[in-house]
Structure formats: structure tokens, C-alpha cells
Image (tube, rainbow, N blue to C red; front, side, top):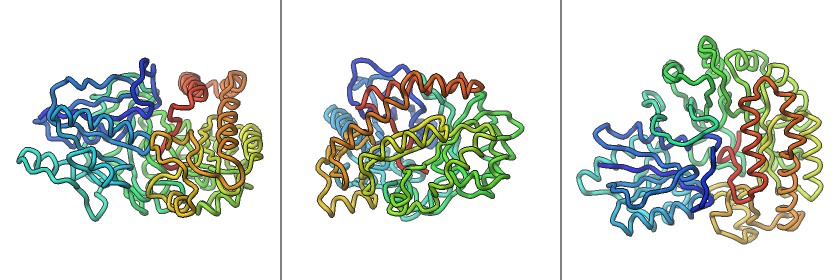
Length: 432
């Protein structure tokens, strides 16, 4: 069979594709690796290239987050109109499988390992099921190396790996624990190292939702990484800086930047979202400890919690600048299906749009508690533009001159995003 795996662009069809994007959709290279070698596999990242609907193929697999669901359905409908079988998977089809099956021949619910192989076998036998699901979460031992060789186009960070899945925290706005479970599962360190060892890139990324969720495992991994002299980035929590040994090992193993979910400078918001392990009064001290180890901090901040009013925007920007945060991701609180926030706002009849293309962390789709939707939207847009203004970028660049080759392209990208609100700015589905 000829199989085409597609990552949709949330922006839909564009006349001009992006010159580069931060990193690839991690699931598709892994699904390609799970595919028996007798099948021909192609990966299409619509952010960087056009989809050729005329290209002959037997099966199209599409992964969808909520923000890309509408576009995923358009793509699926077009291929099915041409007689091609389509399977949908990912976070959004897992949350709303009955909606997804209206646009597909099959829906993979949850993680793909085991299910994808069975679907391909069933397809060869001519008896594909509507839904493929499992009652447990797959073991991560023995996973094949992702087919990064199939990726085309320009990525700021092309060589990405995963060491863990799942998260024991239950942050109200995050879909990670719903999709991947509430306990950490780990790949054997030796298997991760073997994959990293075979990679000739000097800069790599770990697309874990929290690479330091199990400090014992993380320390073992970091020690094993040290001899390879790679530079790497990943996601973690601010609590990582409370463990001096863990932070030192991360630095020695090559960590140059960590995405950290601060989420809010208001303690009440953190309590409401069950993120009490974050303490605002400790933020500055812990950020300083990251910097002392030469690790840049990419801070995630969400606007629109129920305790937020319009003062949250200048207060957040002031905090970020005083704490010398190096990068920042700003998001509008987005009620992703399957999360506690979605259920709460839906029950309170505060969601006014179910247009999934607007669920991209950059648009307001609900009624905030202490400001108007317009005030939330304008405040978010303003903070994003101000933080990624050229004078502020240059000041941060001088501070991070050692990583100029990484820092400047990433800054250029986010500056561009700040001027194009329809572009998805998010790094992850939820946040560490």
C-alpha cells in the first residue's frame, strides 16, 4: 500500500507557505516507523508544503489537534470524495470520536502503538473497523526510531525525540493527562541514547510534556547524554530548579533551554487549575537558578482565567522583563474538549463558539469572568507584540549571545507570529 500521513495546517490553504516552523509533528514520524516496511509511506506537513490530492495512494492518515480539526475534516472529505480510505487520530478525534468518524473510515482513539498495525492488517483483509481503541496505555519499551528521514521542509529543530509520556498532574486546561494518562511511562534510557547516538545533529529536542517528571529517571538520562555533547531543549516545570543535582546534570548534558509552564502570576488562578506546585513567590529565584546554569527559560503564560482582569497584561509583562525570561509563549485560555475547563465553561453556558479553527490558543471563544472577550483578545495581542518587538528581541539576544544561531531564528519566528494572529503560536497541547 501507499500511505500518506498528513499534519494539517490550522490556517488552512495558504498561498504562501511558511519558510520554517519550530519543529515537526512528532506522532507522524513514529507512525511511519510503526508501519511495516512493505508499505510505502510519505509524510506531508501542510504548514510547509501543499497537499497533492491527485497523488495516487491507498490510505491517508491525518493527525488532528482541536485547532487543526476543521482543516483535517476538509482534507479527509476531499480524499474520501476521490475514493481514498482515511483514518483520523490524535487528541481531538480521541476526545470527540463520534464527530471525527463523520469524516473518516476509521478513527484511532488514543495512542497509536498496536492499533495502527492492526488497522493496516485489517485494511489488507478488507475489513476495517470504524473505531480502534485500547483500554490501557502502551508500554514504551521497544519503540522503533522515528522516521525523521521522511520529513521535508525547514524546521528550527528537526531532530526530536520522546522519552516519557503521561502526567500525574491534572491541570484543568491541559489535555495531556486525558490523552496520555495520569502516570509517567518511560522509554528505557539505553533505547533513547541509541536513537540520539545515531543522530548527527548537534542540536536536538525532547518533545516530552515534562522531561523531569521522574527525577530519578531524568538524572539517569542526563548522565547518559553527557558524553555525546549534544545541545538540547525540552519542557519541564519550574520545580526542576529546586533540585540542584538535577539542574546541574541537565546543564552538563547539554540543556540550553527549557519550556516552563508558569501559566499565571496570580496564585488564585494556579489553585483553580490544580497547579499549586507552582508558587509565584518562588518564580524569580528559580528562574535565576536556571540562568546560573546557562539554561534559557521559555515561559508559558495563559490569559483569561477567572481571576484575571485587564491588569493581568501589564503585570505579566512587567514580571517577565524583571525576571529576565528569555522567550515567552502567550496563550488565550482555550477550553479544549475533554478538559475540566471545557466541561466547566460549557456547563456555565459561557462558550460562544465551537469553531474549532479558533481553538488555537490565540482567539477568545468564551465569556471571561472579569473582562469582555474583546478586552481579553486585545490584551493578549498587545502583550505578544510588545514582548516580540525588535528592541526587546535585540536586548534579549545580547543577553543570550552564546546561542545566537538558535535564539535569533526562534525570535524571528515568534515576532512573525505576533503579527499574524491566525497562526498557531502554541508549543504544546497543554503545558508542563
